[in-house]
Image (tube, rainbow, N blue to C red; front, side, top):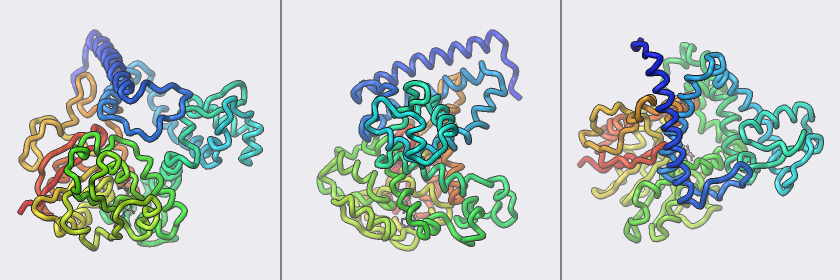
Length: 442
Ligand SMILES: C[S@@+](CC[C@H](N)C(=O)[O-])C[C@H]1O[C@@H](n2cnc3c(N)ncnc32)[C@H](O)[C@@H]1O
């Protein structure tokens, strides 16, 4: 246990946290101004602009400092409810999303009475009012007057045309009810607990009676509606766009860029927007590629990346949120398949959430890179930013539960790359996520 701090030091720490809140708020306002100005509670969200790394950096400090500060000042039981009550908010959000309430409220600036919303959705009015009022406390919907609810910035993205609604549907649908449920029981199970195979995850445990030996992506093949929603959900993931922290715009004309496991083309469309002179290829499973074709304009080549190499001789191979979907043995096979297709100058960009590593001057693959460390939070914040740095750690649990997979540190990826005859070139920091650039070893 750490040595108890003096009362004076504790007060000083809280004031230091408040100073970090103040400075990070100014940084966040400046970052929003770059994108047109700070949004209000009632505004519709501004298009699908990706957050800048500067904004993500400011928010990381703000979340970290404000949540550490309130944790210190709140009674312990109330701190516990912050986590233990999360399923209540999640259930309310799922219900409002499934009922398409944001669609019904669209174009109604004065909102609608809960009785009217209840009639439209087939849900009972008393319960519905409880659900909507709870969500208004989190700035999702607003209560215009007693029992009259309207859309706001938080609810507008729940309209069914918006991929964010698919993301909520996926996370609070199969990811929660089949992925995160019964985690304790699955991890205790003598067959599923110790196994590292994709088809022995918590998700596979929960579906084992109906679908024995089945991993998530195989289950999706039998559930086209959820599969479609999953593919749309991925296009909602709006962290820093790769072109905001990797020099996509300055790549020479006709550079070939192959997005492996690119889904229905969300990330590739942003790459095309940053540099229209690139030659772009989208690869994914055949049925996903068919859906991607509806988005147009790329070279579409189906692939099973666990079985075959991607298109040969590309300048850049790019994978976003792919390596984190697989246990080490399969991830190595995928990297080996890509290595087969690479020419000496090819680069592989592994874009994932990156687990923090200690700031002890350690190296990735023997190459120092000062920008690669995220365990550098200013004290008294936790070195890994605590609440402000939770995303990679939370998603580490999510991919573990769904696929027996994991998020990785830079060194973890470099170790996998070595087994596939690839070496570390550089790390590109996107704050929440990052790109690990790899090249052929020989
Ligand atoms: C987490 S999603 C990421 C999609 C996209 N890269 C993005 O960031 O939005 C994983 C993708 O891997 C694809 N995938 C899964 N197994 C695959 C396989 N064996 N071969 C090719 N693609 C696969 C899925 O269809 C899905 O599009």
